[in-house]
Length: 485
Ligand code: ADP
Picture (tube, rainbow, N blue to C red):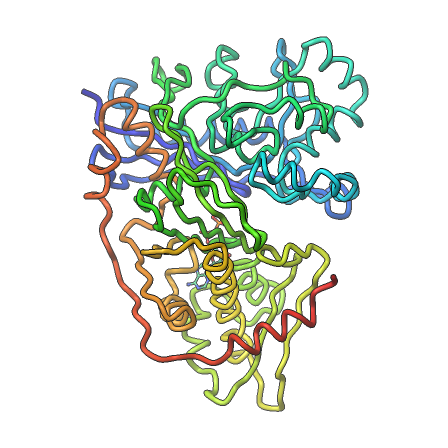
């Protein structure tokens, strides 16, 4: 029986092909960046052909580098940047416009005009009305690209999030499918009835013939021959849901918090959909054998990217990892509070217009104090999310952390201190590609069931509170000063 699993991790800035063993051990990966296009203020696009070529490249390179033959590969998994939209021609496979990326704000006026339908949309989709999600982007392409609406009405076009586009390309047009976790981020999918919603489709003027069929996360998504022979695509999930699975958060109250460019916190809420009164999102975590598990999600726009800003913008240091030693040099007396709203504030504020600020500067404030302030701000934002979850009566039992930033021990310890909670860092922090490897492996029989996967989760380090902190009250006051509404 083939033993290896190949995960395609199609992220916002790069594509990766990651190889895992049948024990969920990371064997290695190949990675390739692609262009970020900013054609106008607040617009963010990707060239879908370039994304596809990057996926082809990393797949081919990983096959060569790890000496894989098709019969070695039990299954392929796909995890992806969520919400990003592609519309392509059914016959030629040619996209009719660039991919509009989740970060893109061009549809904010349209979304503002939907305020009247806000509670209906939230009730059906678990999402707040925001350009972030796919529906308004699809609407924009159909309205603005020459001839698109007519071609859509004639049944000539297909829509997909990135997973769907990749499945279609990998299967050479045989399969137009997506999974429930990606579908639940489109704002067109009813998470209660588990199907595309006609009322939402008409609200966004999107013909249903554009849509992919929606499948369980572990499923036969079709086969590809791109790897030199036939291999099934057996697992698909959006990146954050995949990380939840990679962290083995299978029980109600299990939380994972990922600290990359932004921070995404997700809590497993089991069969319950929580109607957040605190601007958190309810979403589908996964569906296996027809049984749906839900999650509550809070996203912070700026986490590791604030460290990038200190590194590249302010040139405080050359490597992100140096932030740890520098923060340790900060004077104890420092009361610097940084609100890193460089691209607005996410949950629980959802204020895209808010901009950053630094408070508490004195003559002896220097690079260490500001660096420490930035790291602390990510911990304070996490506390905001946990408080919002608590106010929604969603209570956690474990918090598992991952993402590039958690390599920083000072940050991870400070996070535990600010939250006054123990946080656990696993040995494999590549949880995004791991989650979908699990899903693909479940489909091909490499893994038996979810509970057997729990044995693969191994702890690297536990961070337990070692002191109390007082900055959170000052953080809340500082945020109030930058909010625009
Ligand atoms: P993404 O998947 O969003 O590209 P990663 O999970 O690879 O992000 O994490 C990269 C981010 O983490 C970068 O924004 C970087 O600034 C930050 N980062 C990486 N290492 C450290 C560190 N040791 N301390 C603080 N931040 C770090």
